[in-house]
Image (tube, rainbow, N blue to C red):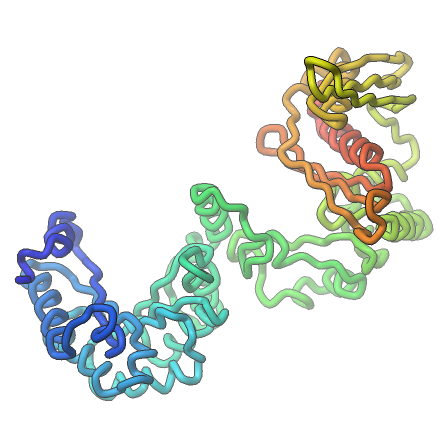
Length: 442
């Protein structure tokens, strides 16, 4: 059809944006077997589309789809597709690794060939099917590319697109490309998390630069060095991208980890090396029993608080029991009765729930709410159970992780036992105790 009759071209113009992007076929396989047309007609369509849009005052970004695969199959034809787009007035020729299978060394060599036969500014569009989208984008910039396409957090089809949250700081901090302001760069973490929220996807803790774990330190030797010199185990200052260092405690930790966490939690540093060593041994003993404090810093803070002299817990469990019944006409029913001490008073309450853990939660809150009204504002946001030794079948050790929140404050707690109710109680009680100790009870 005539270019002016094409509904997509008309829609681009009706959007009234100053710039438009269109893509054309660079791979002869796609021209013949996907478009079902001739090589010459494909060239004519590229030229007509770009020329028509340029004639109506638009900046035209031409994406050469499957360019690297097309070049490997027929270099001369792939280059001709770029040349016709250039002659038609394209403002940028974007070389696309649409299948994500090109190695950086191949990509750079092909870019050098493109530069010999074109003079228009070049761009890169990389997919991550070989885990090379960021590497290919950076290699392209080093080879002279001036336009980089990608997405926040690398979101995209299949394995995703090039991750701009990695590309931007690498360009800015490693390659000296002044892409954005320092203030904008400090917003990178918040932008990354905002986009994951909008996309309704969990934010990946292990993303470079912007992840929760990227500047986390666990090994005792690492933390000891970090305390002495903050640059010893970090390739950049986390603050420049809006992140911060994090020390976690696990079976790999040393006393430096505990000392660091005491300071981070704002607790008294007067425990001394002997008591710090005892806390570390307790952490390691509990981790051998199935606890994991790396992902449950609420429980870790409570463990350290309890080691301090004069610590008074907001409540103390005396006992509880849980019944699960299948009652005729009502189906499955769980009921929990609990007895706790708050100060000098003993509260004995019961509650029904849709399961044993829910019943325990409701019974405990019922007992505590008269003393701590704001407890009603604390809510559980996630409850996870992991089987630690599946070969043991129904007698296996389990780990329970509970995520809780009150307003903007969030925290995680852990429990572990061969009894899933006991493990759940440990995590649940820690969750509420942590919230109460952080000013949420009054």
